[in-house]
Amino acid sequence: MSAAIIARSCVSLGDFHACVALQREIWGEDDLEVEPATLFVVAAHTGGQVIGAYDGNTLVGYTLALAAVRNGAPFLHSHMTGVRANYRDRGVGRMLKLFQRDEALSRDIRLIEWTFDPLELRNAHFNLNRLGTICRRYLANLYGITTSPLHRGLATDRLVAEWYLDSPRVVAAVSGELAPSPSSTTIEIPSSLDDSKPGDLARVHSIQAATRERFTESFAKGYAAIAVSKTADTSTYHLAPWSDF
Image (cartoon, rainbow, N blue to C red; front, side):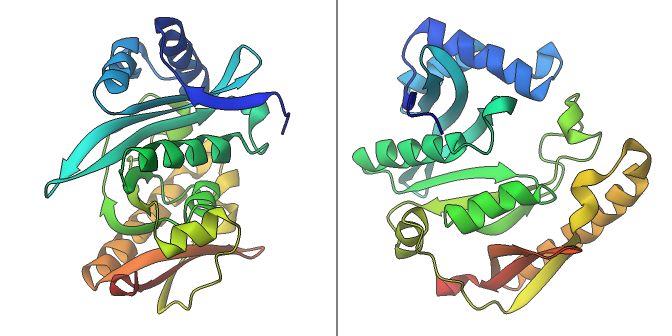
């Protein structure tokens, strides 16, 4: 990653409009599904976060998080994180998340949550293995069918990532020292899924339905997803009793 890339809080209208422009570029959604600049303004002024990654003066990635409360305790819901295509796999996403963690801890906020597609195994690896999140909730078709080509016309099923910012697990993960944890059960997904063509949509629907059923059953039994591993043919979610965390 270029030493010129830095992460900082977005504070100006120009920053927020740049985030919206990058959002359009990354997701390619119709106008009605694009988060407007006003939402970024509200988040920045009501205890949320708008964080940008800049290469010089150019925005190349951003994170938008909203302030939230559960059972009287504050947390952040990280609504979206996006990185420009030619800056992916260069550490920009990790830079954004670590800045997000530091900023939250500076305000005594110890939990950040976000959702991700369980069929996107690269995201699962980043969230579980690299950041140390756990997942205990599966939300079926959370956003409905969207216009984004990235969603391929599929139901927007999502896992909820729980990032306990100062837990031993997360501290180890962000330091690159998270040891593999023993798992009690697994959920397998074909590794070829990322290469599926539009004509394979029926197959992907079938895999999504089976994955939804397995996660729903496992979470009902008290398991949490804690890691992902990959072979040439299969990607595997590893789950363990959530009480272990």
